Image 1: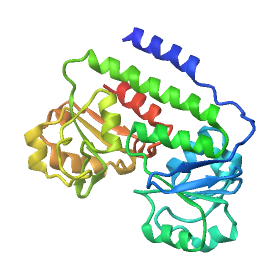
Image 2 (image 1 turned 135 degrees about the horizontal axis):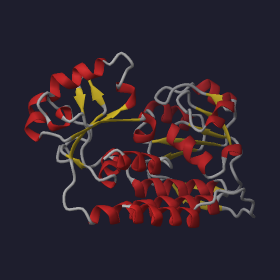
Image 3 (image 1 turned 180 degrees about the vertical axis):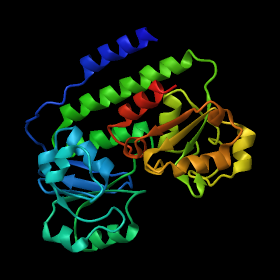
Image 4 (image 1 turned 90 degrees about the vertical axis):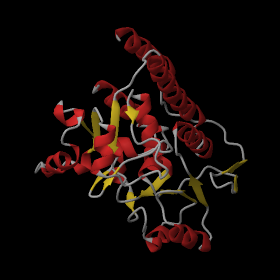
Length: 294
């Protein structure tokens, strides 16, 4: 295993350097993830980010100075504390956004509401939509943001790092014949997991786990105790916001998972909700954390 980490360390040093980037800007056109085409004749200087994953991505490529406002849920990196807040993800304050006179608003397909999107469109704002549902989607988003903010070199460096991380862990998994059966829980009441179409499932696979509910038809299916017992997970991955300090979550796990190998052997992995659920640059941290817990 040491040879894998040595190789990854070398790749990380070689590929990643997020430096200040200043270069001449040329006008261009680009399509967002809905297929809508946008023209950029100058670098946006008053960007409003309506999703934490977007905010993290902009800061990661060194474009924080282009961002004037973020949502109440944008809490990483710490420098986001200096930005104006525009309310929630689903229900941003349109009046506050309008008062800021943004030259670009960045939003997502899954996290933001259609009504908020339409309100901003009706007011004449340039609203660019992203939909990063997997690693390739994250790489595209970073590339688009790099071009829009004139931080292409920084974005390319981060893209290479994420891609090399994915390739590194894929190589590890190719050498392993079996992976531990695992259930990922994003809700305890009701019990909700993830299927193979989700971003979370890709992280779990790269970290070397086998999602036992990958074959479900819905992206976030509700499951029951009987189906859990039948599939008998060896690991339980639980997002941190469900693991309250009172320990009540343990009683819920005992209710549904009593008799499973995961509970018998205390194989419960609690991971930071933001790291696991936000499709952005911290995908690397999510994979590395889960891999270290096997």
